[in-house]
Image 1 (cartoon, helix red, strand yellow):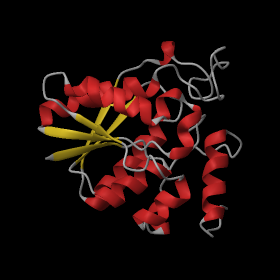
Image 2: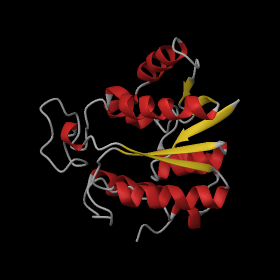
Image 3: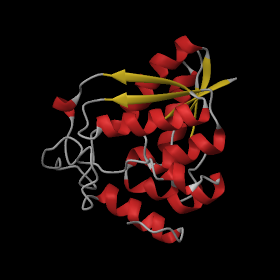
Length: 198
């Protein structure tokens, strides 16, 4: 069964690409501020690992909120980078592309520590998997790192530091701002791994 990975170009999805070596990677530019850098990082990883790479562009910035959209967080936001229904949108768009590529399985880089987002929980993964399964193509959704945190995933995957260095984790710009929650998580993860974050 061909597998496709939602590859954002961040540390988590790069680690899963290295660990699971999917047949296909799908990167979505949905109008997020760091889309250009995310695509650049994802493309570099796919070239290195010989993964077929597809980029989907659909400007949904008018529907976003928070750091990634460049607006104030919505009143429902559990964290500043929250974008309404983001993972649902990403999985749906990936499935729309994947079903025509002969893919039967979509991988998403959700971690144990993503549970502060409703769409980062095992319940969300299970419900979305059931939704995909009842539609044409009967795609499956899996989150292979759902029981791990970022440093555990990277260690499990055995990603070389020189490939991990390509990751773009910033939520607000195409160059790392060093201040947003994405950048801080990036630096903290490197420190946990005993790598120099600077």
